[in-house]
Length: 354
Image 1 (cartoon, rainbow, N blue to C red):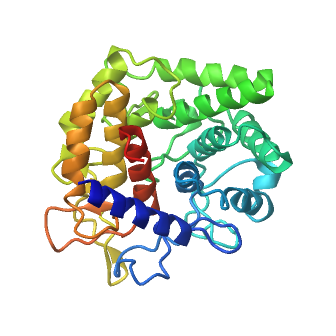
Image 2 (spheres, rainbow, N blue to C red):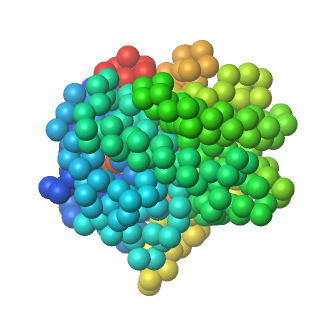
Image 3 (cartoon, helix red, strand yellow):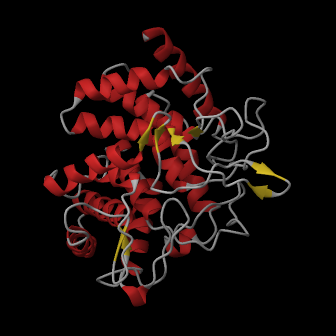
């Protein structure tokens, strides 16, 4: 098993570096490479969320030459970021918002980047400080006290909030509240602390016995695997009975032999044929399975985490980690996905293999 882990670590370094482009952009997967799957969706876009986890994982691997170029890319190329501090669904590598889906405002991406940058940099140079200030101010400007002033989208890019319904995605609240509190501790703006506390207060009122996918006047009570983010890295609430029950429900409702599903009744498989997505049912998501392993470790279930980690690695026939694993040989996933490799690196570090 140690040999398999070592091989996957080396491949992860390759995939991470391949996703870091000459102009500083970081793509979710470099589709130019021969190893990328055919007949699946193209992930040669910049998702700031994916980049945040990649930057954190790269730092664990002692890769130090990609962070600053990406920050400059954000400041100089990402459309309207330097003017608004807002991050949208995804960007082309030259910085333009994706013309089809770039309208989706996803504030959790700002929270994730705040966390990653403040974890990586103990001292902030001018560009890093400018970036985190933009991210924090962008979140505060768009927060309305009970919910965001404009519609937001979840990290899976499939559901939308509406200010009239005062609804919020649980994961989004956690990421944003935690990121704002972190930057407040470093740079001390009371406005950031105020908004962080408001978000935390709304988050704590979400659900009764567990944290659901979305909460508001019309809630989505399904369990969503993104609740794992409340255990790590967005530690904005205590690991109380409600949170522990949420993790238990992830296992009961979403864990299949192929890994953790995003949410109940997920259909996205990423396969494309004749210009259409198949949508024949999702598999187990590799990145979420590693995330679940991290959550197990953080909740003192080391043996369960280690056993799942070792058994799961046996499912990778080569050393490239895909977005999803399926229970058949027909459905094919995007592979490799850099976010999957990043979460493998983080789980390996938490387990002491790195």
